[in-house]
Amino acid sequence: MAMIDDELWNGLVRLHARVEHELAAALQHHGLGLSEYRALCHLSSAAGGELRMQELADLLGLNQSSVTRLVGRLEAAGLTRRDMCADDRRGVYTVITDEGRERKASAAPVYEHTLTTALDQAATDDLAALVAALRTATTPEPAAAGHR
Image (cartoon, rainbow, N blue to C red; front, side, top):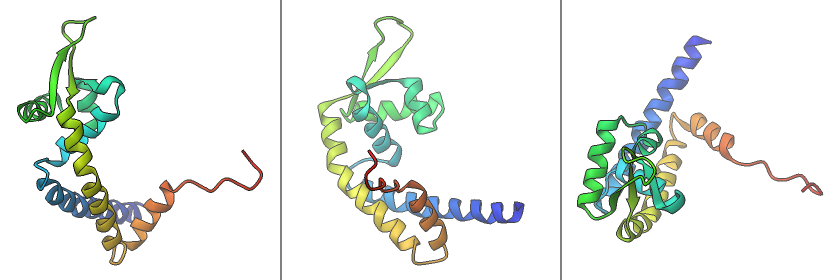
């Protein structure tokens, strides 16, 4: 089983690298990196459009130093701003701005199209079984007739 797991993992790593490369190239046209785009996505869907810096770091899989630099770039571009926590002055939030929401919204169709295209392309080569398994695992089952 270990050899199969290793092959599966290596395929997943190759698929991830290929898709990330395509997404990064597509987002450059919107002046965003992948982490920046994903940060804007998390912020735009968060209550009040804000997250504690540590929450954002956890969601993005970044350490504190990396998320601080990321938020600094977003702030410099006018896409986010920092805010102090009213209850805990040590707590720092990053808040998406209207410009950040607009940039995320304009990049979203390109991101989604590129993601689907990259997965479709991978589904035609040696990663076909992996893509099919991922898509099957994340597709909700249709509700049975008569059940609610």
